[in-house]
Image 1 (cartoon, rainbow, N blue to C red):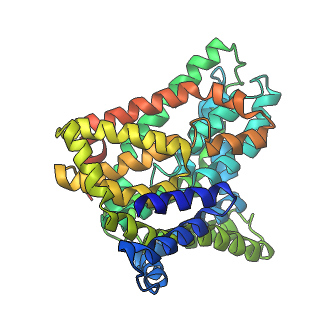
Image 2: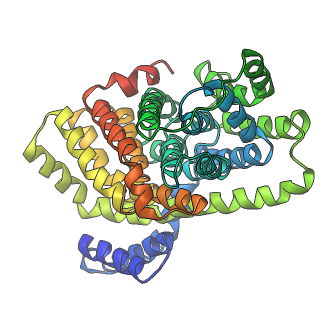
Amino acid sequence: MIALLFVSFILLLLVGVDVGFAMVAAAWIGIELHGGRGVDAVLLPSSMLSYVSLYALVQIPLFILAGELMNRGGITARLIDWSRALVSGRRGALGHVGIVSNLMLSGISGSAIADAIATGKPLIPAMQRSGYGQSYPAAVIAAGAMLGPVIPPSIPMVVYAQMANESVARMFFSGILPGLLLAAGFFVICSIEARRRRLPADAKATWRERGRQTVRALWALGMPVMILLGIRFGLVTDTEIAAVAVLYAFLVSRFIYRDLPLAAIPALLVSAARASAVILFLLAAAGPFSWLVAESGVSGAIVGTIRGITTDPTLTLLIVNAVMLVVGILMEPLPAMVIFVPALLPIATDLGIDGVQFGALIVINLMVGLITPPVGLLLFVVGSIGDVKFGQVARDVLPFLGWSIVVLVLIAVWPPLTLWLAGHV
């Protein structure tokens, strides 16, 4: 049955069926043929509803809406201006601006694609005009945008927490140190590439100008701090903070920065609703699909295979790393999560691996897949913004990809990297 399930799913994808509909159709075929006899097809809608009926998933549309308000309301622009003043005077400073801007946006939107578009539209053309080449600017923005779902808030972290019955707050905090480590490495890579490529240096901003840009961006900089402190000190729950983020983004954009006209709000709501519907439908489709995967016993087979290789938790995580890297290359993150997380979770349970560390490893693996050829969704996004061929961006992103793999290995071999801050929530 499991072979039929995946063959049906892959064939439907190959003929152009959307991922969510392909999962539903494949699950229906699997249910009808389950155990060699028909099974009541009412399992299909009931299982779909059960996967999206939980209160915690309210965070997904709220964080998406907060990101839309932030981009339209001038918060993103002020963060970019602040980042530019902060790192000015360095050789290749605009590359560093791309990393710093995306790092700050990561603490607000939680979406890699949204961050790539928000920072890529102003920065990629600016870098191209300043002599950074055509493809390197796109590679920098792709690497920086990958941080979006790693630094909290993170939509993939919410999805994993729901599937693995883990705390959303702990999952959020598990990504902070890996995210900062990734950003630090990217910053160093930008410095090395700036010297190797002989990139120009911007004029150094005065301390007065830096202070002015900091004051101008103060409300924008306060948003990620508010989110983290609110969760850390129990002032709000991880679901309530999403609503607070929307309210904060609206008030700052409308009444402080005054860059959000009321006429723009209906379009923002429609855009956020569409993005939310795609994610939630995908989760709903994962319900019956995941149930059939569990019923097939594939999880036990995977656990048995890995246990046949090693019972050491660290080596197991390295194997999972390798598997999920391949998966991340071939599939987009959310479909990959809903298909493979139910099959892989028993490995963590069986070997006593902390579910938060395991989740952080899987999420970051799939984010690395966003900048990994031959699929690399972020590479397509930034390539379209900069009018650059995919192969050129893929070549220039390799140093950032290499550092990302190093961080993944560190997560596997050193649990405190993900668990230290998560243990203080």
